[in-house]
Image 1: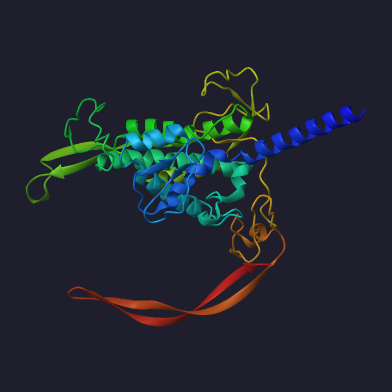
Image 2 (image 1 turned 60 degrees about the horizontal axis):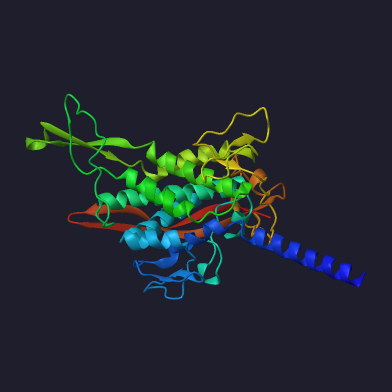
Amino acid sequence: MRRCVAVLFIIILATESSLQRRSKGRGRGSKWWNIVHAGQPTNLVVGNHYSNSIRTNDYPTINVPLRRKQRRLLHTNPGSLLAIAKGMKLAIAECKQQFRDRRWNCPTTDHMLGKSVFGKIVQRGCRETAFVYALTSAGVAHSVARACSEGIIETCTCDYRNRGPSGTDWDWGGCSDNMEFGYNFARMFVDAAERGRDPRFIMNLHNNEAGRVHVSTDMRRECKCHGMSGSCTVKTCWIRLPTFRDIGNNLKDRFDGASRVLVNNQGNYKRKYRFHLKPYNPNHKTPSVKDLVYIETSPDFCVPNLKLGVIGTKNRQCNDTSIGVDGCDLMCCGRGYKTDVREEFERCNCTFHWCCEVKCKICKVKKTLHICL
């Protein structure tokens, strides 16, 4: 009897340990995001099977866990680490811009404490996590493609392929952004961090791909005129990336219409990208490659939740005249708000003096702020 109880106790402990490991690993694919804190990184990648990390001159204590494939990509593509760090900075700035007036305003955490850049929310498979994964993947693809045309990455250059015929009043020329290299590099680097066969793994892969597709399908032609006295005698054109603001706007629209999904058991798990997502609500359409998907509902973000790293909306500014998400009714979650009138000093009445100076006066202004209770 005692032996059976002991065996049962061991099984329970093993099960709890397995569940804890599974829970802690839900956001593991985001560990590489801390590359953003490397300042001006070198391409020195150090570490072994048990301690994969990046060491930089500016922040020698920062450790960024990387998969072996990720480290190999950085070794074989000098300059790519700098491009990834730049892409992450773009993604963080754009995330904050897109959600500046929302209850969840894309807060970031202190990397020196070993936390994920976007905090604990990425441990939950909600639509905010879907947006973050798509945006960071898009940031890498965008930055690497641009770095190729700028000569930052040694193994790629401008894209001179797939231009097609010239127009009636213009010819191909210039240096096109290398989206093919950026897309392939981002897919190999970003997706290499994902391991597993559970729904969260598939959700991450889908959203990673959605971010890259939004970059690659929105490329545009850009032209420049050449000629005497500003005339357009000759016009040369090349292919350019969309602005990252356009990508952020498009992904934000997909966030608002994100689909909650289930993973079809008939999917093929033997191949990494062969899976089938079906809507949680059978009346909804099957998500496309550009749609964002999630598997768990979002918290309301109204009150602090230490488990999810939610700080709540207390002391957030709101707009008392808006009926949208930035309005005081929604932002403050019905708790009400207080109004403060503050005096601040600003530059005003600026004039340009030849040449070349701008002189301004300092004015005292009153600002009315509405603060959530």
